[in-house]
Length: 397
Figure 1 (cartoon, one colour):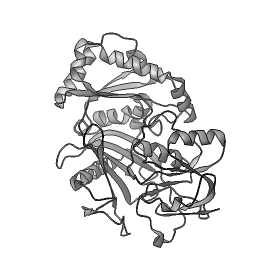
Figure 2 (cartoon, helix red, strand yellow):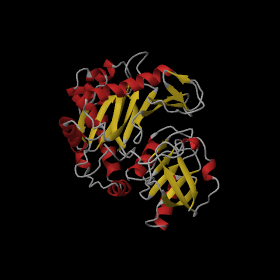
Figure 3 (cartoon, rainbow, N blue to C red):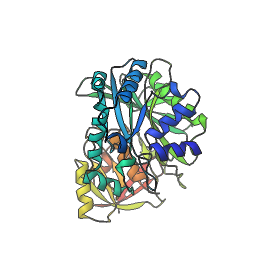
Figure 4 (tube, rainbow, N blue to C red):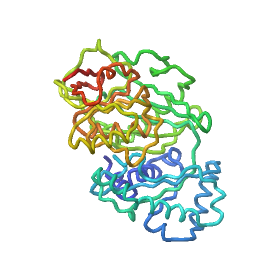
């Protein structure tokens, strides 16, 4: 990793640090990262009136011609993982704040006080400890920036296939539901996902109202970051969150995080068993033995861990991985396999679960659309899982 980028992460946090680095140190960076005002939470939460900060936020919103802004916290994480490689969707965020609320000159400080209280919650501190973080809320930074509109994009490097990239686009359809489209780009000659429509090199996981240009510009944004040479792309896989800016334009960069270490399998499964979907993570060639857990919520997985300390398990989530909001109870440190129901989208929910598996050298994240391989097992069964990062097998142990 670039030395100066590392210093920015250590100073401003894993979420805010990379964005500020790109704006300040990369030519053309201000055209890719929205303007932002960063404060230290430990200082800001003690203040009452912050008129200069309010004027700066209002000016940034005027620059992007939006009437809303967002407040996001970030943790430097010295001596721990921080939110560069952990704390997924755990740090407080407040979005879609009307610009007119800045007129009193005090709301940013009030937001900071609210965030500070949340970060002192024993549940959050316990969550951070489980991730190996000695958390200090006074070191948290808070960034205020214009709220950029949907559609939003997520580009995720595959940790076991360097030629393979996963792209997701999300756009709310109304207040209750959102449309999500997932596609993948493979630069190899190998067979890609079957099913969906082909467009500009992508194979989509299901047909829909997709816009191929949004996928290609999301990929171009990721390639631009790769060309800067600031990341360890040979040894690490990253995830980029962005927002579409219009036809042909690179996406806004909203977050850049470490997703997983790159690991290459030393074996290959029979490709006739190819799985139509996203398979991540590798195992030894003779597989891993673990216990099956079928459950309808992530909270049940935490209960299972408490009742079965030290037991590695394969978590089959019998509902969509992207419809249940994340909570501080959703932390599964002994999970070695993860299979949500038919939703390949790498939302925050699926990303947190995937990272918890991929932190280890061996594990399986199955984001394929099929659940048939799991239906023959019940909670408590012992199974052997084998994965080469492209396909997987599951059999009774």
